[in-house]
Image (cartoon, rainbow, N blue to C red):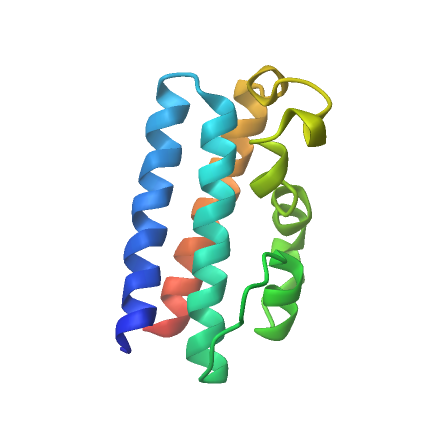
Length: 126
C-alpha cells in the first residue's frame, strides 16, 4: 500500500477513536466532527486505491462515494455528515454555538454509521 494511503488509513482510525472518546465525555459536536473527518479520510483513501490518484482538496463525501461506487445504502450518512466539517466549528455557519446543537442521539447515530462504512471499506480492500 502506498505511504499516503497508509497514512490516511492510520489517521482515519485515530479520528474515529477520537470521535468515540469525545462521545464518552459528552462532547457530541467534537464527536460529530471527527466522524466526518474519519469518513472523509476513509473515502479519500478508497478513492486513491480505486482510481490510482488523489481526490484533490474536495470535502464532498457524496462526490467521493459516487466516484468509488459506494452502495446507495450508505448515502444517508454522507448527506448528514457532509456539512459537519464546517457546522461543528463555526457559529456563523451553525446559527449558534456549535456545541449546543449536538445531541447524544445524533452523535451516536454518526458513530454507528461511520463505523459501519469504515468496516465495509476495509473489507473491500482486503
